[in-house]
Length: 184
View 1 (tube, rainbow, N blue to C red):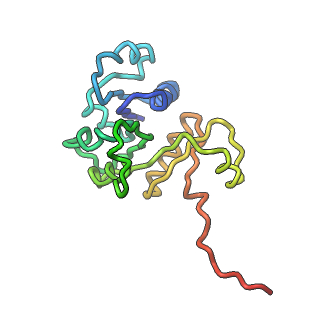
View 2 (view 1 turned 90 degrees about the horizontal axis):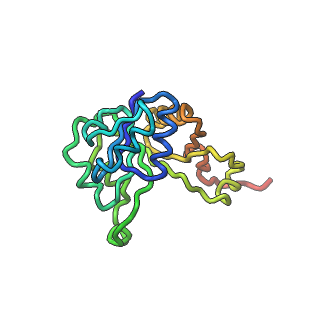
View 3 (view 1 turned 180 degrees about the vertical axis):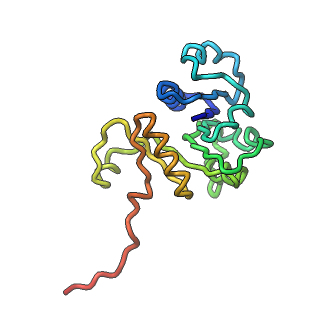
């Protein structure tokens, strides 16, 4: 499978390494200058190619790590994104502007810019107390995600499995709405 990765950080590079080892073709592009990553891509093996943004988005699954302030600029004028799955990793925040009340999250911005794509938000940090509330014992390979499209989430879960990651959909842990209980 062809995987596009846009934006480099330790989190996305872990995906790149796992995907290359699993035999996926990885199209790697940074949001800034690519030249400095040429040696890194070469060292990761023949399954990893350093490419332009438009080449990276040719993949069916994209992993995005874009500074929040650059999301709108970077995602404007992309080629056809119909039915693409965008795995959105947490963004670095370089400005306090986005923390103002009523500002949109970066996932909301991405979804509004690319309405034909399926955005899956990935979180790699979950407080252990949350896991204990969910009756889960961390094994170290969990990756948590959420999204609105069930088919896209199933594809992402299968992709995670190919990387030896245990995909955990937050929707699986949603509690049913509170109902009135009668006492007998």
